[in-house]
Length: 461
Figure (cartoon, rainbow, N blue to C red):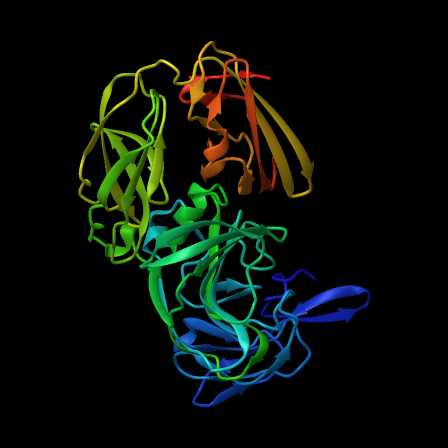
């Protein structure tokens, strides 16, 4: 069975040539309720939450002591290779997990429902001084309102802490500021999208709206607003040891649109412009802060929104030569609150001479299941040299760039921007330069069909 498919509140028994899924669920937890069964579980808070031992990846015994607000791992001797799957996922959850739904969770719930933005959760944890583990939320989404079986939409993991050399599924694709912290974003696929947010500085407690992270997933095209959230879980994945890991308190609530949050983010600051050409300008700013987390930024040209960014930079293209433009930025949070505007920066684009001219782009890829490399050759078909270049295009599929060479490549949603490095910034008339990148894809690796060089359209080579 697949690595995360086994995070189940189930025992698997073979009978008469078929697979029978059964559940080991005890009554509501009382003081010092100890569970050592491999897939043992109980409920707390009057059935509002369930606690699962879920020793899915190991045959050594694991025991948990369940309290009225969480649990502690009291026995565990895992010794799993750190480059493979963990031993277990003891956790507390709200919602539906393998045919077991907690009371009053309101899940499954469609992401497009106004109540989704009001889903709030918090946890506080205790970490032992030894062992190898991650401390993480595991939040599941499915294309249908599933109440049993494996979810096939997306798995959102929020890693508050990890030790040893363990890492999430897939590869790191970005770094973002969300929910009061800075997170490395990892993307992989285990038959469903696995998107992990790994906190760059560990914490033992957090409170956040689920939409803060899911909106970022949507902006990266790793998820869909038509899907359903089915469960919110918080616990641990131990590879080595595990005794002493504890969830002290866990909470989950669902509200109306915005969850009652009316506090807007602070205004972005220090907006600055750089790399001004005849048709583009690079913008950067200092991040906003918010009580539940900033989910993105809107870039304004005058009073018109011309783009969005999940981070603190944006490349504005398609500008006219020798023209003055004024830009500002506003932040958004999970409840839809918008910050005051940043400072305004005004730039005048360069004259058109030598800014780009005619161009041709050839895109050659090498593809395999889930991954690819691409090499792009940019030819200057004009009559003047290109001094400093920015090539922009969009992926028709769900590709994500993970590394690049001979160019600085950034991606926001489907839009990709590649800028020259020091040694290849000049392209003489009739000359060319090449760069490339490696990436991942899920359902489509279709090649781009349109490019602009310094804001001017290119032909396909």
